[in-house]
Amino acid sequence: MESQSRSDTYAQNENINVRCEYDPTLSGTEIIIRSPYKNDETKALAEKINQLVNKKICVSDSNGVNCFLTENDILIIAAKGKYVQITAGNGLYTAKQSLKNIEQTLSRERFLKISRYEIINTDKIVKFDFTVGGTLRIDLCTGTQVWASRRYIPIIRKHLLGEKEENL
Image (cartoon, rainbow, N blue to C red; front, top):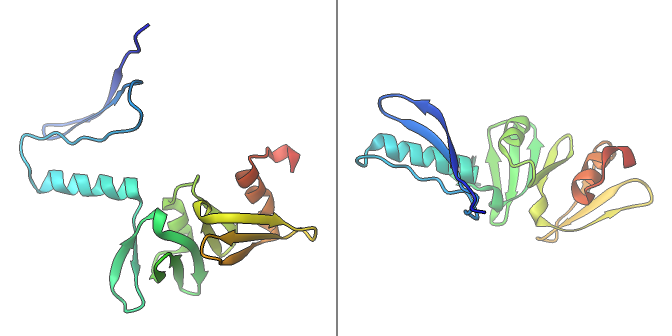
């Protein structure tokens, strides 16, 4: 039996037609922008899609130079007073957004809030240890150790071990 493709139209106007096609023979998602010619509108659209897909966060480095970090770059995101400090593989950065705003833009599968003030990239976890005292130590790939707040441990346990809420 041959699998069938289907499509849904989401928006149409005289300039842009947004349509999703579903093809079960594909192994991943592919985004193609088709236009009669290259212009600023298509370039801006491609950049917006790229930012959504790569989830870039605007930050400042130690010299105050603005740059972007992708989710893959990030190890730890921590609230530090008025600013948010982001630890990446290549250094420390500052974001002017709130921790809550940054948390809302991040992939829920990849990032995990471990305390009121700290979020970690779960792809960077090397090991974790639920201790007898009810605390949780998490070792990251850089050798950095972070400790989870007891209040967040049930959520973290569910995320890391795939346990259901009622078992906690």
